[in-house]
Length: 266
Image (cartoon, rainbow, N blue to C red; front, side):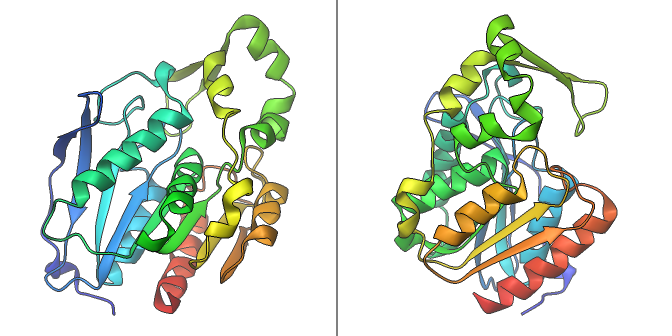
């Protein structure tokens, strides 16, 4: 049931520690009478304040959920670490650590919803495969499906050998204009360890997949491959003219409409 925005108090970041003793910045929005809990995760080099991440959270907030957003370590947010050290492993471990912390809070409930974009997407899938009984609904958006498929994606395949040879990949940040993102080859070595497909049968909860029509990093064919193997209730939506980031106004509003309908059904 939608709630009035006045039911939410303006929140400030909370700092918690991960298993390595690093600071993780967390936002918790809690209504007076929550309908459930949703934990929302950004993608590689992202942050909890990105427009598409904020709209995921907004849809759940308008549906009466307590919403947790956080900056992983090794990104451009408020948490500790360096982007150069970002891996699937560290994103997944930070997600685990945030959930462990959440379980100690008075507002924690199970089952809860998990939402993640890109690298956050594969992280939430990996968690849900290990703990399906905890998850009410799963929304991996523009998700990485496996390291192997990432290597084959149009955005990466042409430069993969150059990346491995030089040891670094450099690109301009779309989310943070003016910044150059430098990622070592060790990131891809770590990513290649992961594949959500072997344990996909554990994902018996409702699953929402969304991808941009022009996504060159986690393209539609990767999402369709995952969709076809999902055993439970599932949806796959393609956002016209949208790229991987999904952060312009028209895609964002379409995503919100999709989320609100999906939340009502789970």
